[in-house]
Amino acid sequence: MALLEISDFALGLTSYEGEARVLNGVSLSIERGEIWGLVGETGCGKSVTGLSISRLLPSPPARVITGQIRFDGEDILRLSDDAMRKLRGRRIGMIFQDPTTNLNPAFRIGVQMIDVALAASRDKPQLLGLKGGEGAGVRRRAARALAIEMLRRVGIEPADQRIDDFPHEFSGGMRQRVLIAMALIGKPDLLIADEPTTALDVSVQAQVLKLMTALAREDATAVLFITHNLGVVAKICSHVAVMYAGNIVETGAVKAVFKAPQHPYTRALMAAVPKPGVKRGGLEGLAGVVPNLQTPPPGCRFAPRCHLAVAECTAALPSLRSVEAGHGVACIMANPSS
Amino acid sequence: MTALISIEGVSKSYRSGAGRFIGSGGDVKALDDVSFQVNRGESVGLVGESGSGKTTLSRLLMMLEQPSAGRILFDGKDIATLSSREVRSLRRRIQIVFQDPYASLNPRMSVHDIIAEPLEVHKDVVETSARARTDRVVELLETVSLGAQHLYRYPHEFSGGQRQRIGIARALAVRPDCLVLDEPTSALDVSVQAQVLNLLSDLQERLGLTYLFISHDLGVIRHICDRIVLIRHGRLVEEGLTETIFTTPSSEYARTLIAAMPDIDPETPWGP
Image (cartoon, rainbow over all chains, first blue to last red; front, side, top):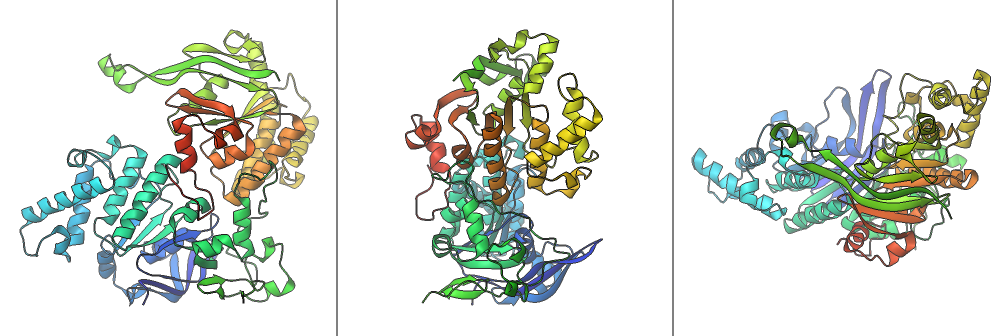
């Protein structure tokens, strides 16, 4: 049983124009220790997928239409709010894009980290190296020691002093590292990272991402890494899922998908990345925009932008078919390799 | 080739916040003795991380700030000594395209008014009649591959890539010699970025424009620029032909940045 199993998940979001199916039958399965990249253009449903797993979308406007999200065998869509709150921060960690708005500016980072550690250790006292039943002071001291250790692991030194600093005393890259430390402090089984390095410089990005993946590997944490940067996926992920207009159109091991992309959308995205050797003015852009999901095109949602589209494409939504072991493509043109 | 822009030993300091209260806060040197040239018709990439002084330099060039030391020559003339008439002319000849196409277009103005505004400002040197102005706006929309049917639409009706095209059309309206492109594609998806980059290189070829391309995305810089100027903490670190810097960087900093740039090949190593 995979750690996270999303099956045929469809989600509607209501606006004053009506309900749009922003996720249209997403299936994804993540094992412990795997690092998944979720890529696609703006508005394809990447973030909404992440927020659905952590159930952070308010309902209404969000409404689950069909499908299941099973985390460690349990359907989290059926959990009570209380049970869900116990999962977040303890078994499901999250990191978001903007490191400046995700720390409370009025509290020292230590206070914020200790809060998370204490909450996470309520059911798992061994996290703090305790047996359970200790007094509040003992637990707090142990939580502080753990917070210092985590800061050290993300490379913030001297950790025992920096822990008492306020968020404004850290640079953007360091704040993001604090957030990574915070997300991993409860040793979650799954980490959802939504564009964690988009706001950072490239050299800091490399540092932060390598750190995040190294820590995830040490503890066999599964990671869902949401990004639009294909280069980063190539460098740090073991698997990739490409999303378009609420569907996963291609999925598989990074090496397989990047070496031989099968879906025309994946190919178009990869062709649009500037590479050495491509002449100036010779990039292949992808004309058109992600369709309005209020009124999605019939059949394959990518068909209106696809240069290979034929009449058959508009007949039905293609489902993911396996072209080789572990490499699925949702396109009627894709040929299984023999 | 002749230099269109010459930056000669330019420094810019800002009074730091602490100094206002304590008196001895000292100055922050945003730029420290930077010199380089931008030749007519070429595209120069100005590369640096946040806080390196890229934006300060573009503000000096646009005459939004005065350098603390050094001088900037445009077409051979020190821009600090220009008469107010010449300043107006300079402001016509250098135009800027901003990073965020969602923030840089007035949501209450139609595309026509947005693109025609610089024509209005510089009406002493460009088309004057309302008719001629509208014709020019249509021509500009076609130049950036948007049609005349968009003339009376508003910014919210456009996608990010289309808005950036509108921003480019506005910059081109007064027939500038030089465009300062301040991270023009970093808010765009890679698919749209490719189209905008193609458009920019096509425009440069057709109109003989000079580009100062500010970015931290080395992939984009490598694709579009002839030369690169690399700055860090306000100092010039390395300058040279794009391919030379990418293949044989001479500074440690350039090597670090290039190593940190993720390409889309899962099998090559990554990271400094």
